[in-house]
Amino acid sequence: MTIFWTNKSVQPFANDGDPVNALINRANDVVLDAVESGWSGPPFDTFELANLLGIAVIPCESIRDARLIALPNDRYRIEYSPLQPQARIRFSIAHEIAHTFFPDCRESVRNRAAKHETEGDDWQLEMLCNVVASELLMPMGSFPEVGNAVFSIDSLLDLRARFQVSTEAILLRFLKLSRMPCAVFAASGQKGSSATLRIDYIRTANGWNLPFGSSWRLPSNSVANECASIGFTCKGHEVWDNGVGEMRVECVAIPSYPGSDRPRVVGLLAPVDSTAVNLPTIQYLNGDATSPRGDGNRIIAHVVNDATPRWGGGFARVVGQKWKDAQRDFISWSEQGKRPLRLGNHRQFQLDEALWVFHMVAQHGYRQLSRPGIRYHHLESCLESLRDLANDLTASVHMPRIGCGQAGGNWPIVAELIDDILCRNGIDVTVYTLPSERAQWEQPDRQRPLFGLADSD
Figure 1 (cartoon, rainbow, N blue to C red):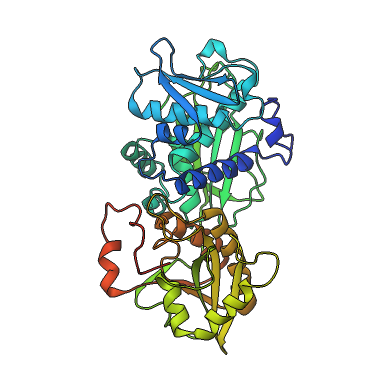
Figure 2: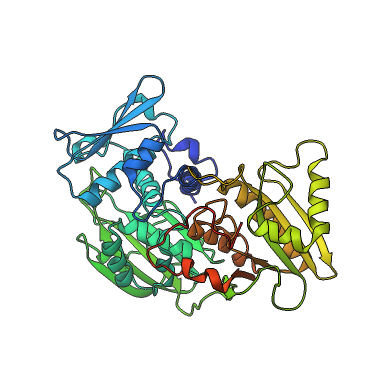
């Protein structure tokens, strides 16, 4: 298959043929760093994100949409039209932030261009900036209810309107959270052409592998070619490749790339006979994580800080009081060479024949009131090590709401990390909440707990 990424700004990300993956990973890194600095939502304020990134944002009525201007000393300024709807402004600022991901972004002013301002393969750069903007507007941990939506372009368009995000954003969020074998694709055609559409990018989920990717042309009889005007939807059962078999196709027309008068098409794909993948989900129970339920091998996981090996607060204190040998082992381990008590490290200790405790160093310092102490990147690394241990032991994992007590983390983000790294790899996870503390997690408008809650680390 010919990879068609020809834009010089995009090529540094396209070494493996998939700049979409690389850029989404970069966007996730930016999001986690921003959340650690206090960025919260939903809604996620792109003005605030730009400020955290050191990017000035100012209104400018003389421009059509938005543009990125490089300043001295590796700084940037985003100018935006205040005459646009608020949702459009949020997306435009996210789009311009995405431009800063590209190494050559300082070479010229980057505009969300009018049609006559975009030439050649610049549409590739603009499309990828749209994808990154979607990740910034609906980042990890946001809008978990999207994952419960039915496989329907109509239901997702309803959610898009409610959340005031782009169509691409809501589809990509659905893909990330869905447990069905499915895919999201974006396709476009040439200006003024009646030729079939060509895939710009396609992303799959839950073990579904497809033989088509960037530059692959949709069949001429696909319903996707009927999405002739913005907002038009089309649905059908089709065979795009005999090796894949019959698929459900649901798609919608969205605005064209600058320089084209033909709408783009984004949509959903799934095997006709698809059902939800039989993977565990987090099980929530009222109870005490130091008394894990069930049979077989079990691992109790929790977060500790990098400042002291002596646990004086939160869930770690309870662990140390109940299993003094685990506390003594951790102190002994911390006194070994090469700074074992540093972020991202972990220590495991066997409590009895079928029970282990897994300490994850993912909180920086002691309890802080000014900003969270959780370090999501290091928690992610620890969870990957926990996954490997659980697989080796064929063990289930038990925990409080890790990282969201004294570490001040955002539970929806932590829960999504747990789901991605543990549950989607077949590991059973149970999260326990003490009955006396359950009410603080049931407030529907709570997006992040107050720092220092006692039911978790």
